[in-house]
Image 1 (cartoon, rainbow, N blue to C red):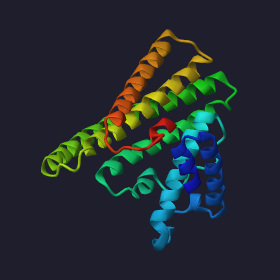
Image 2 (cartoon, rainbow, N blue to C red; image 1 turned 60 degrees about the horizontal axis):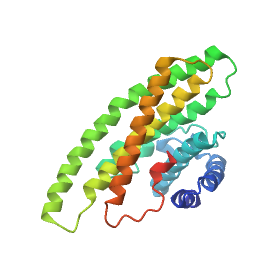
Image 3 (cartoon, rainbow, N blue to C red; image 1 turned 135 degrees about the vertical axis):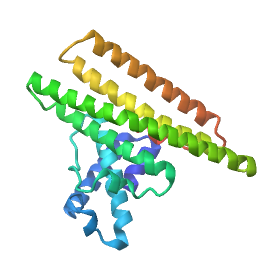
Image 4 (cartoon, rainbow, N blue to C red; image 1 turned 30 degrees about the vertical axis):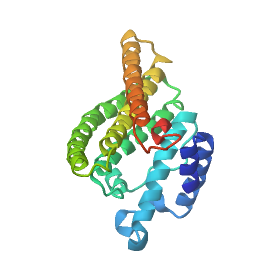
Length: 238
C-alpha cells in the first residue's frame, strides 16, 4: 500500500492501481477481508484497518477511473469501523462519506456487466438513490468543517505561525464535494449510453459544472496556501 500511495502522490495512477491490486491479493490471502472487528489482534488493529481502508478506497476509485475489475471483495468490517483509524475531528466525519462514495464507484463498475437494459436501469436508479442519501451527510460534514475553521481562526489570531489550517480544512471538504459530483456525472453518462433523456442530460451538465467549480476552488486555495508542496493532490484521483 505504501507503493500504491507513493504512485498516487506522484500522479502515476496506472502503477498505483497495479500496486493496489497486489495489496488486495495479500489482504485476501491473509483473510483480512473476512475478519470481524472483534477478531482483530489488538497489537495490529489500527494498522490492519488502515491497510484495508486505503486498499478499498484506491481499488474502487482507480478501478472506476480505468474501468478495471475490482480486486478487493467487500470487507466484513463496516465503514464506521474502517474510518475509526482517523482520530481527528475532521477526518472522523469525512472518511465515512469518502468510503461510501468509493463503494458507489465500485457498484457502478458492475453496471457494465449487466446485459439486460431493465437491469441496468434498476441498478443505476439504486446508485442514484444511494447518492441522494449521501448528499445530506456531505453537508453535515460541511457544517462541521465550518465550525472547525472558526476554531482554527481563533487559534490563528492567538498563534500567527498557524496560517493555513482553515484553508486546508476547506480544501478537504471541497475535494469530497468534487468527488460527489464527479461520480454523479459518471452515473448520468452511463445512463445516457443506453437511454437518452433531456432531463438526465441537464442534470449531467449541472453536476459537471459543480464539480468544475469545486476543482477551481481547490486549485485557488492550493495556489494561495503557503508551504503546500504536494505536486499531485490526492483529490485528483477522484
